[in-house]
Image: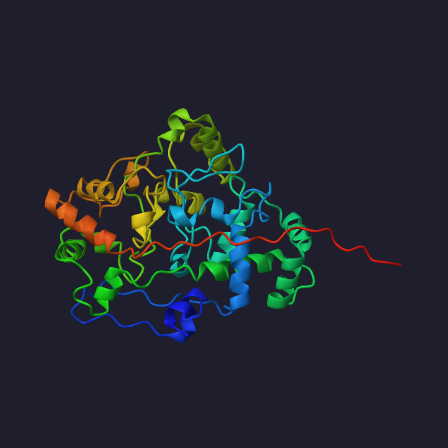
Length: 374
């Protein structure tokens, strides 16, 4: 059985240990090892298979039309290639959809770290008012009307009645198989000098030196998982899209903004929604730079279209938004030349391997529950 096959089953965490970085490589960076597997949700092939079906099945949504895959499509970088993600019919989302690839490594998920695990993230997405909008008891009842799911939940979890909590655990198990640890960058960090081109090596030197990217994008995930305001401009759809405006106001109201903020704020407060600290307005978690070749557009609101746009943005010292007082002092003009920008973009492309694609699985059909005979 090959390591690639074990990874597809999500068993790589116990099948192989990560390979150490070479001593002559940048100490602040490292190749990506197997994903962490929580002790209370171990991986099995049957659980992963169930999770894959549930990931693509709209049964876990309010209107039976919004599966996980509606906002995290394989052919769109396991995200959505538009500035703002999709919403429940009649709404839109209000932030950019992040990729599922390598999400298993995050300590917290969502742009402001609102969920502490993939299990909790799945629950939040399925129940979110502008996304899945599902009710747990309703979704459990639907699952119970599908004989194949009843049998699968019984086999995997021992459920007589499919548990929605276990559904989220199965989805999380499947998502932990969606990892990429064999990029050109990883291979280079493990000792293959030819894995990067000369231009990409120049870009790596800039990344860890003059461009100062490594200050926030470090470690195996290339993220310190901290929160910063980098001056990303507001989402321009709030100026002319009435549905987006309504959704934004709903979020301001639902997440406990003050009346003054509700009436006057025109930008996403970010981490403030969780902490209610004014110093956190406009801050978002440092995203991983892995798999970014396929996950355009970029930033929490999709306001930068290409990787080159992102590098130019930071080269110019970031931007300005409504919460400029909180802009990180780390964001300063870099003085990169056009050739250096090209080199840095080439290095960023080395953080993505081959595109990860899969066909939607064949989904089981709903049937009436059998009627007990007297």
